[in-house]
Image (tube, rainbow over all chains, first blue to last red; front, side, top):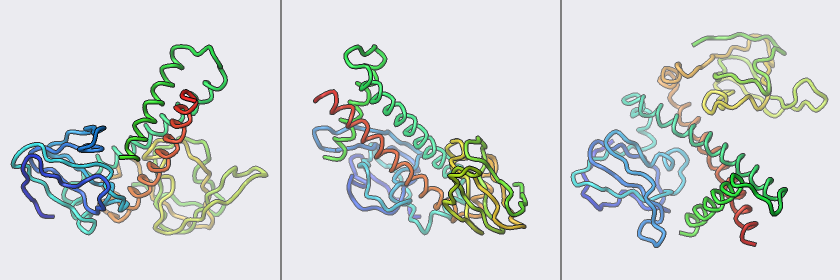
Length: 155
Length: 127
């Protein structure tokens, strides 16, 4: 569980890279981007001391889903491998429980969005020409979300 | 953390119930059924010592998606509620990664389904 120091602009990992460890920010700041450096680059999070990131690759060996870029000089980051995960949990149980809670919240929210999207698709097909403002807003919301999904896949 | 004992055939929780807890099997076996007690009843899984049942009810607060029934006498379950999570994982840390992996699988699947419906909505609007 070594701590390393980074400078502003350093890349911790890139979207699409293989990965198997997570990171704990001791001090400084890290920004998370999708499509970093591309025309549809989008910052999705700004993290600081106490925040964890990169956990998905540790949990299921998936490739990195985003790029992590250091945004302040002298940023100190601890890396945690899968073998070190349990020891890290014993050291910082609250951080891991919070992480678990965040993952649960994401599943819950995504499920709600999915149900709302299904309802929207159904209503769109049923109402024909006369769509009320609420339905139109939802159609726009999910069409935009499609463009978001699409841009991540085709980065 | 409470320990609960069940006899063979006793229902642990019912499909559709809302219950903010999960169970860690200490002894015995648990059957997971869809449509339990109806002609369409189907055993979908059998779990035993060391396995966890009902984690979605606790972690995602969703109603029970199936009915859990004890399959033998002296089936003993440890009941875990939100306030017990930290202690439970300190006691059984390897279960933490397992549960997180289940969550990440579910997230991936539901994300895929959402992306699919969004595409259909977009394509319908831009046909």
